[in-house]
Image (cartoon, rainbow, N blue to C red; front, side, top):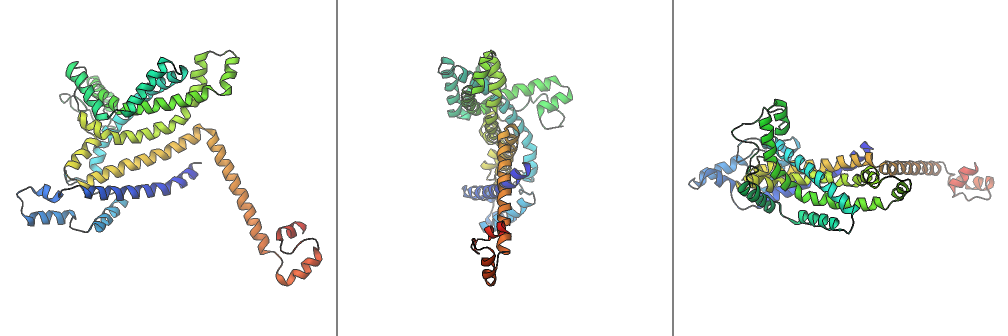
Length: 389
């Protein structure tokens, strides 16, 4: 099963990554402005600007620039950042843990709030609970993340002073010793509870902002799956046996309803990495989102393209992992694959037999002899001749 999915997805992964590299390269170079002029400054002479442009390879035709970029990409080289002067790979790896930590916490928020919301909405269908849950879900899907983030900052930082305004940790405490790059885990490993509590406080608002959109998506998916499961025969059978209502809902219906939601949750992780761009900008979160925004402002083409390629690769990889996990959770997928494999085996067997029979069929000069031996069968029907023989 793993090999089949890998063989099916790998060509698409290559095509998607190639398409992403082409699109990001074209879009990045359509941004008005000259990076060489930006680096040199307004007072620089044309000779200095031309020298910088030649050093960066910006004087080459676009197709040659893309070919150079593609060759580097195949070797894991995303180029050198114009803004920082460091390899883009090193910059992205430095900022990736912060973005990934924010995305994981946001996904946890989406599950902790969205799943109960969807269950209650399905159990109390068409009641005020259902209407409230559906309203919250639609609001989460339609509300812009930056608007929600600014609103939360005004309320919980400006008026109530419950949470800090931004950043990843209190600047007075300093960063924990780097082990995993995740401040929550690193602060626990260091045994520093002040660092841990500061990390949690700085995570709450940006993580909730980032999760709010996917919270609505998860709630709607769970509601739809729960309504489908609650109408199944096994639920009525369990009720007839006298099982409690919530035991049926939580013990039988919900686990089955969660299986289709694996796809939504897996793809949501990729969306959270993209969605972190606006959230990190609003809250000053030092992750890849803030890095790419600053790179766009500086016309840093390699950094922008590197960010798009990395996140696209993670997204496609998550999609493939979701397929693998789905085949494990839902036996029907494996049964269908086995049936398809058996069908292919039968087809291959029949095809081989037909080819063998054709190759051993009577030749034209043997037609008279074949007709004499098998008077009731046409010599053209090699399959029937083989059966008769």
